[in-house]
Image (tube, rainbow, N blue to C red; front, side, top):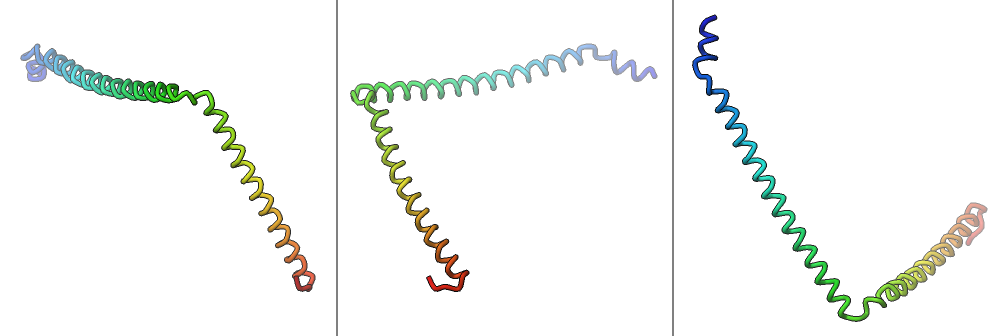
Length: 109
């Protein structure tokens, strides 16, 4: 039993060293994480600067206000084409259904 107390009392600073090592490890981890965050923030700021520059270029073109109208016109054309296609598909399906009904009745289409 005395050997257990001897090992715990023989080096009283051993626990303090472990605490310091843990603090150093934690400090290294925190420093590494802060470096990653700083790198990420620098990248993000660069992206924001790039976006600001692009917006300024668009605004300097002078057509920035007209852009939504042009987009709306393009969407309207796409919708009209899609509606025409849908109508053609409906007509094709109706004709096909009619042929199938005739075939089921034993009539030739």
